[in-house]
Length: 196
Image (cartoon, rainbow, N blue to C red; front, side, top):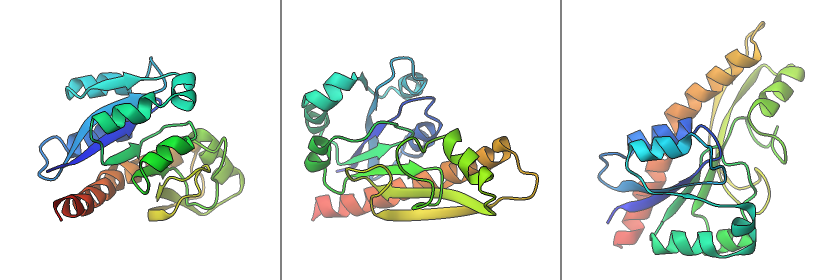
């Protein structure tokens, strides 16, 4: 039995790509579904390249129906990975998958988290405050933005003269390296629980 993984993304899906690559020929985990709230999201093409089924949902479907939860249950998903997904996860989904939903955030939480703190907004705030380091946080998801239990963090130095683009690149390199490995560790743990 492999741990069955679903990925939620809202945009390009570069982190989703790294996870799809990582689990393409994997012994104990597999990506079985990619979901998005954005019908134009490039992540749909990435999923198609790996022949992974996709589902596009609306705000109404996500927040006012059980459709997404039912789909995940039907697909027997064990682990949900938010990879650049910008909506708050509804309580119904959290209850259906307790401690089975993780997210990546482009800063060292608890700093620079919360509503509106995503993508460039985070990096601009870090620069504006003259921080000497930033990084990434991978955490469990709860009913509040960026407040779930921290699983893993990685840091990078901010050098004098670093621009927004420099900081984004440094952060993305950490994301692409660490995120698939953290997902792998969780998938391995879940697999041993499934087997027992």
